[in-house]
Image (spheres, rainbow, N blue to C red):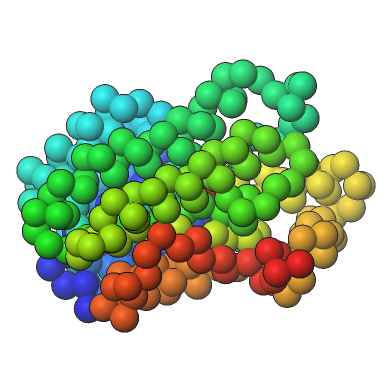
Length: 256
Ligand code: NAD
């Protein structure tokens, strides 16, 4: 379905980003990976699906590096047809204890990076007459939790940004939508599982059960593969009139 398209997935060396990249590649899209840590492992997984794979190590908190990455995609792949703004970090602390540099980093990586990639990708998408912008927001783009002020502010901002961009391009063949996962067991959440286990004096399995029981009525984690399938749907012709939505995959978290 996506043969001949090129997808940039930011923060795709791990977790949800890698899950989305694999599902888009399974539909034939060439993939540009981005993110820190091990690159060879994720690259080999995506290449095994028979598509062309690139990598750019831009730090998504740095606009100049984002500009260099978008230029790399244009010159190496000829287009950025699918833009998945996924890179994100978390920090958990009460607002009066929140380190200002963590606030700035979360706003830069989880929100402002999507502005920079979008402003640079959109002209080419419009010119070629097709494009998909998928912003990986969160349930925290729709509702709040205590101790996550920067993350909640950034994700609410990302949902608002998605709607505004979607309206600007509504009559074109480019769409912009947000995906709002609940708990997904990735390295980002494993840190919170470990913190909960230490705080409550319980083992990891019990800490996971308690985190889920508090927020996610299905009592099951959403998986990167499920999020990848939703991304594939949003790239399909069937979704060409889905415009500016914040689509939850959260086991009932926001239905409460
Ligand atoms: P993760 O920690 O597994 O992956 C994060 C990715 O972002 C990694 O590839 C990492 O290298 C990359 N990254 C971090 N800082 C970066 C930077 N400055 N520049 C470039 N890349 C950077 O986390 P995840 O859980 O897969 O999270 C992915 C996205 O999904 C995030 O935006 C997160 O907020 C969102 N999300 C996660 C959950 C969850 O439960 N895990 C729920 C809702 C939303």
